[in-house]
Length: 228
Image (cartoon, rainbow, N blue to C red; front, side, top):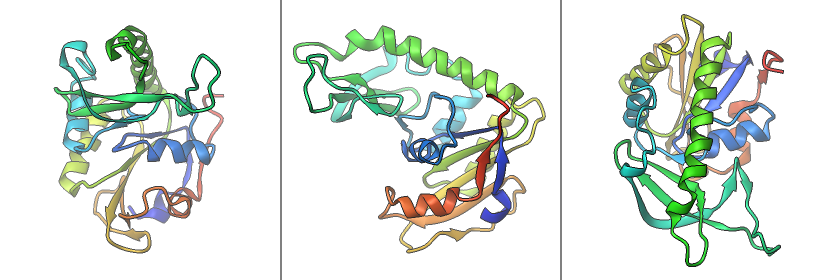
């Protein structure tokens, strides 16, 4: 499948890593309608995402598997910056919280509050995450046509393994998988993989936040009113 063959109308479009770019840009193009578990995560390995789907998300972000790591980013509530409760003008930052079992990091969900441990926010976060997982299962089981988008390196074999893992949630319904491979090039380029439902394109490595790149990839995509 090439990029032009991928274009069309879908009942559900969702990002599955390796960072927030796929979901952010789906929303920017008015193609994102629901919040899902991997929207605001960093998942560097496609094999770990495959394992997550194969395991039906069991044990994902369990407290016993979480550790705080170095780094911070903006605290987001489904992609919207969280502002201080005192009415400050600077957005709140968030801890990086790493799942040691799945090798996936939450980078926006645990706000940094002075003199307060990140774990204080875990119960509310876990409840929100479980709702997103349940929503994912529900939508995947019944949406007639679905597109998954992942930005990050993957071999064709790894992409096919991910596709097979996702297929167990689809009850035989069709879906496509778009893999955006970051490499040192200047333009979007088809990779012409042989799988009929997986589209792989190379995109500029140095420009993950370049709107023009996302515009080219997402142009020609639309969302139906199935879930309206």
